[in-house]
Length: 577
Image 1 (tube, rainbow, N blue to C red):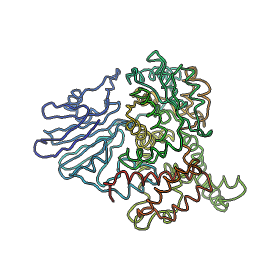
Image 2: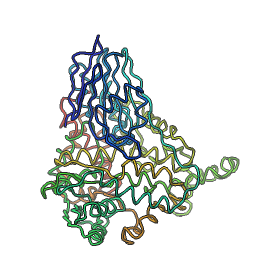
Image 3: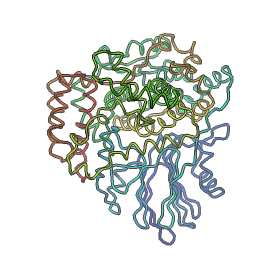
Image 4: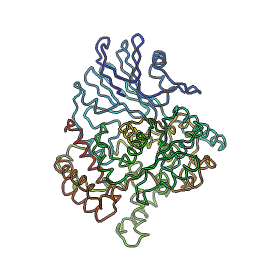
């Protein structure tokens, strides 16, 4: 469904061009809406376009504080000469815009905004660098000059030729202990309500990876509909990447009707260009491949609507880095005099490549701990660690600020309304892991497969419940998702609750070493990228050698990002530097 608007702030703002799934006009106000906003009124009633206009007329943009659910909305206020754009609290939907003189253009697609004749925006070299570092282009920037994306939970007001952006929602994290039993019951009730709110029918199914969240959603789907849930799972034929055994455990527990599909290297070859072209900006998350094929197989089996488990890790402390960073933060509890006068001088004399493992690990620990958060989260990143002078063409590098994406990360991290490390990492991940990454991946791949997708874990009831869980209860020591696992004990199988975190990875780097057609595709794209004036050919050649001789996953993901960038540029020839 198209969501697009072009409004000229002249006289009475007529005639605006608006296309949206839902829209309405009352007097001097027009609203355009995508998604399904709900009121935080205890009953979580759906907000109609008429409701939104009444609320805006009474309270201006302050009414957004009462709104939750998923939505991208625009309000054209002709009497005030104002356009209001707002995005839901978690960034499930998407909203891009460009202000050009007295005209504002907006859409759920940044590329559509850039193509509008009144905008006609070129690619940003800075955005290409941001992509190379972060595997996507984070909000509020886009891949196009003068085009911006709203961050989750923010509102933009365009008035008298000026645009102001501010947060309309800031989470209130728990500051005191709460009853486990009360929170547990609230979670169970909330999960059931959130799945029911997705209005599942005979054509609804669920992604099922075998992890905590997809298993929970699949089980609740069966409970809500009182019939066998239809689930769809992906395997890879490579043991360390397979999680099908756990998906099968969930299938048995919930009596699901299951379909499995084994993604292959040939599937990557067949879909690579389509996947690249589906995004309105360069996007490098390789798990788009299994997501797409899972949705595609579901569509072939008559499914029109899939429930996804995204969000649980970022609400309840499930990402491995939460435990890892807790270890690194312990370094900062050592008195500064001891760190500066003893630990750091000693660590610097240790050879970073020492054959004595304890010494090498001690040096690495200190080196990483000294990097401030959230930049430290990128310390493993090949593109972060590489010498940029050897990676980027000199002319291209002269046009970018290599610290800009890290400053953007720090800005979001600093906005957290809490000094607690867990809260700050969660808040950061809501933007960088969910809104900018996982939700873009799942939403775009489902759309490519012709599937509608819902996210029960991001229902306002679940979000609000998660904010009430104290950090020590959410994550006991270094155990990920302590509260969630304890709360779901008895509903989820013990094998799933007790397993180590796996993820939805893709053995791309492994297959690239042996699969001829995949190699032809990827190396051909890398050869084309060499002529773009972005990345030095020698760097690409060296990366290929490192991949062939070294860890296939670590170097493989860097190759994936470069090849996907070239594929995106080829799929969007009108996007020019």
